[in-house]
Image (cartoon, rainbow, N blue to C red):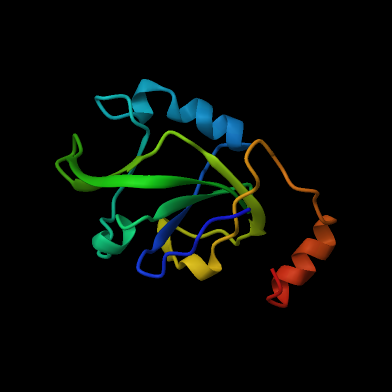
Length: 148
């Protein structure tokens, strides 16, 4: 269960704004607007990460949906794109497989953040769409004291 921790890689964490669950995220990523010319899912962001080599050494993007990390996707590459406004942006090109993770509460934040492997929640076993949830108040209390 879970994934091996690659200490020479770093992950990204990002809010998935407007999605209700992992299935909503998958639906959005299947739209042409959210894909590269070759049909790969991508997320475009203003800031280009500086730790490119570490990200491309096995890093994933962890998706926060409704205040909770729920899934991750392996990052395949980072492409430079120029928007219609002439501003340079980063297209984070993703593996299409959304891997569900154990849930982990997160407070809202802007943009993306780095997430070291030791702080990333483990993957759920293949075929399992969710975990047996803790009561919300217990989950929140454990997160506040740093247990989760």
